Length: 595
Image (cartoon, rainbow, N blue to C red; front, side):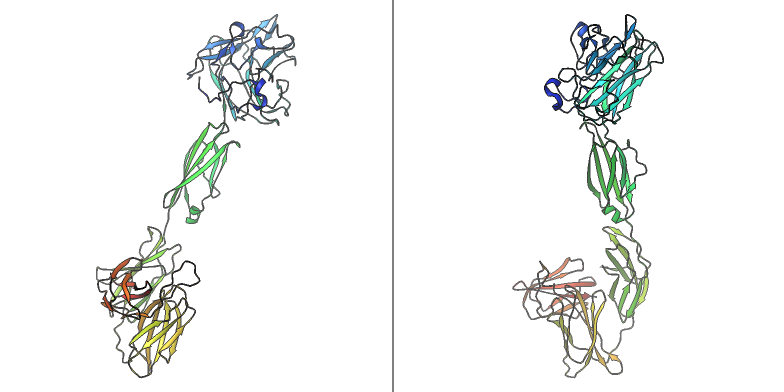
């Protein structure tokens, strides 16, 4: 006999009534436990004719069942029950056993005074609270009439003395029922042939569930059987569903879903689908409890565990679903360059979803290359004069996910110009705030010149351009914490210009922004900028040390002294930020270009 889940319960309906403990399986469902002796010997929690009441109970007091040893195929139990019919004065009394009590009220077998019933207030009742989905029962049935049928019936009913068959048509008295009716399985009443009957519970009634009334009989028609018809029963089990009926992701049903398959993989079409994945499912039974847990198992993979527990809190199923996203990154297109002198402005079409771009360039015919990362689809490269370069770009769309490099383009820088127009000696940014600054042009020549001034963001967006006849110019409405490039050249006669003087500066953080430490705005400049070997530092503060950072925010150089000139020729070509820390902790920062 299969060992089923049982609530350990000594059930006395007289004492416990409708307050009985939760019960989801029958007590003694495999007929392993027996009590009494002789004619009164019976399986525990079951009764038959010797325990009947009614005016004809005395005539029906002979036992019509046997305690059998063994059981259905695969059992590890030792007992089962056999009920049989007998003829009394020419009237056939079908075998009958119930979890309630037999009421013998008439000598006419089909009389409504003969029934099984839940006898509340006695030992002949079975408290029950579950709502199973199916009933499984093993039977071996012999009958002389091949057309006859035996049955095992279960009725879940409310707080009443429910009668089978009298009340089986009154939906207000019961909640649901499972009825197994079957033809004979063996042609010999001495040789059992076992079959498992599996029947669903149907819930068409309206009552609560307080009790269960089980009845088994050798014939579905009272008095219609034959003497010595027999029905053997073993292992009655109620099944509670913990199956899924459907599973979907973001409204898309998993096409290969089967309730008896427990592992699935779903591929999302987009990163947004992956990040906002919504799991939907339905359980076969409304009263099942589902718990959904998830965890990341990779950069683009999330594992879900769906645990289903049936009403009985014993039957469970666990489904596994892995949701993946396979990222792609489009190749950069429309790569182009505009060359002015030795400065090449490189642009390309933005790539959807790109986090950053990797720009690689090299002199044609050389093996060494330089790589610069930028978040903007544009960059300015300062190159050697009269040289041919090749440039290519690739996009980074996700962490560790890159496109391929696009085909390189060829650029040729111009010949180094010879200017007769004198440039200013130096330019310096002063009074730098979060949204304004002042340009100071220093020129040892006492003559007055006209200057062309060009202010751009570091991504080459021109923010201001003007012609100035003075050596100072103020700029307003700047972007906080943005890096600007200031370019100044002298305008001479006959459309003749000097070389550009270039410096970079970074506006301060917005003082109204919470949690921002505002660095010092003291006068501070670097020259030459761009540089190939060394930097001259002009500052009106003393500083304790200097740190230099690359574009990735990594410190690449430190000088622990108040130096006026530092050597940077050992740094790779690129854009760097020099931060000077004063004696009182104030900071000044400027960007410079190392060629």
